[in-house]
Amino acid sequence: MNQIKYTLIITLTLVFLCGVARGQGKQRPKPKPRPASTVTAVTKRPVTVTFKNGDPVSGLFLHADADTLQIELKSGRLSIKMREVYSLVFAGEEETSSTTTIEEVVKNLETAESDPNLAAGRKAYNALRKLADAAQIKLPCAQYSYLLVETRSVLEEAFAEITDGSLKTYAELSLEAYTDAGKACGAVDGKGVIPINTDTGEYLMDKYKIKPGVNAFGLPVHLKIDDALKQIWAAAAIHLKNLSLSLGQ
Image (cartoon, rainbow, N blue to C red; front, side, top):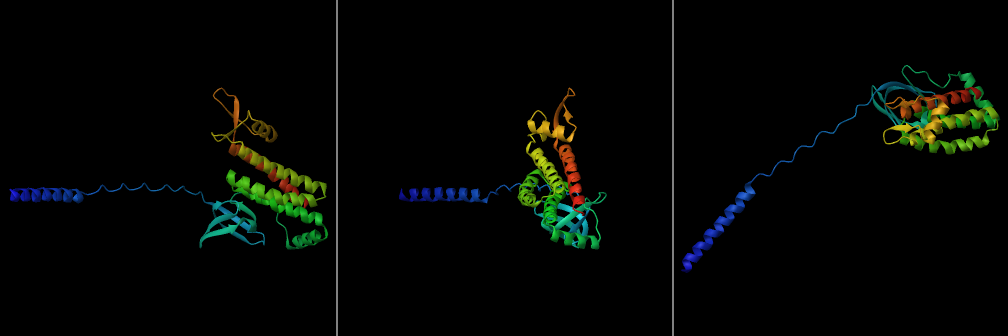
């Protein structure tokens, strides 16, 4: 009797072990491969960057933010600090800053040393140039707004030192337009447009003569952000050019 019980226990143990072994022998399902990440294509535009020391460099525009500009050269990628940039010009576009001779540069520097008003004017101009360059490369709204805040503090110091009426007027008008561009960025709704039934939308449309988009009934309802920024930045560039001419640049 004991032998029968012993045999039964051994048999059940073997059956249990075989079941475990079969369970472990089954292959686990292979994880599904992750889809390859989509890389957004970058539009490479020929651009010439002029440094504040006068040295130019040409390449293909890759990317820019409030601090850094990246261009592609034959030798590789080049990162440039925005604070080192005097101007940049894309192929087929005119440079907004005027060309001067070495003699004119020396003369302007000597005049600035003896006239603090001109020195403050150039300080304002250089700060506004950062906004102009940001506009030219169409810096994203979030980064543009950050740059605007950063630049405003420098301009307020310069404005306090400028006594010449025309210099201050042109600088203030230029800043006003660049500030309006920041307001346009902040007024964009969830559909990516600026409704004209808001104070900001109505103000920008009237001030800069921006053509509005219409609804199905042909009634004006909104401003496209790209159209708004194009008009506003164009007005800012005119005021900045007048400031440059007043400074003899």
